[in-house]
Length: 434
Image (cartoon, rainbow, N blue to C red; front, side, top):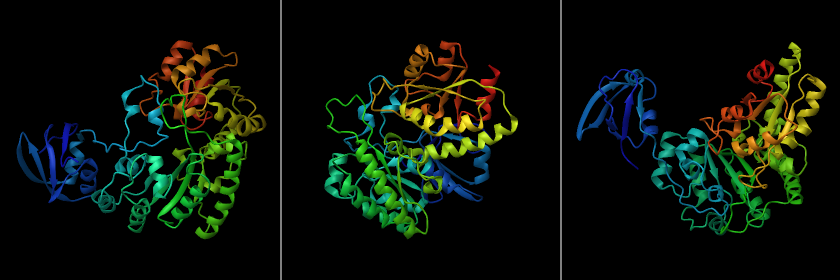
């Protein structure tokens, strides 16, 4: 890892620093990366900064508040790349021709801390573990999948040089909160293997605060990859029954805090009722598709109460979603709207995933072109078009680089992205204005 951070530009007062300077040390400590720089300059205080400028080392004592005034913009962080070859890696199942960033595999504990990315810890060294502890990088999100070495080596398709339980235990003892996930591969890490993994992770509680079990994602682009299968409905229902009993047992041991969670996809695919909101605690794995539906219903309830007081006029809209999302809306959302907010009766447009194949049925992996194609041929479309926010990245792009504005221009119909629910104020205003 490089032991300096380069300043790309200065958006505030220049002072001592200039664009192109490399921050080498703060006090006597080397600057490994941007994260170290931010941690060592947090709060009030001063320190001696050593920089490299055109090959020369310069130093000066600087107050941290001067950094705030300078608005330094640093070079992009160099990520730790994933060296595993997981048999179910989604990036190995991607079609060709998408933007390059979608094919980049990271396994960086800093991204786990900053953004909740799941990492494996398979490539960390003792220095990395010590640094996580020193900086207090908590919480971390860990892809465990299994705890026994032979199964882990089959999953990761590589020798496992580190003991995952030893590393997790060390982090937990140091006060690092951990959230784990198990990508369930039928016939490999399910059944007794899964139950043992959950049991061993629970031994780390409260350091390991939650474990989520999620289904393996398989696309149509699996040529020359390990043959894998999806979980069956019967297996999903058995899993749900097991999780319910384990959840009750763990809650008794934790004083009520939930520990084991299942992805929403299991409940929807198996046609089983979603757990209550209390089952998810503070929703620690929301971005992992765990509790997303129940959380959405809570947000929707607040929107319905707000709108019911105002008695809104009739609003027409078409909600774009995947096959599982449509099942959720029809079972849980439509009946509530019909009873409590009849002036809003959205049309649900189901988009089948042609980019990844029919086995991928979540709205977050819909492409712009699949959505546009379905909208063009639909006779069910009414009013404005509402796109789920999880289908877009932070730059507002679909997986295939289209934007909602491209769809709006092509159709001549307003397209709006729902950041929380399709009843949020900005969506309702846009659809009503039409």
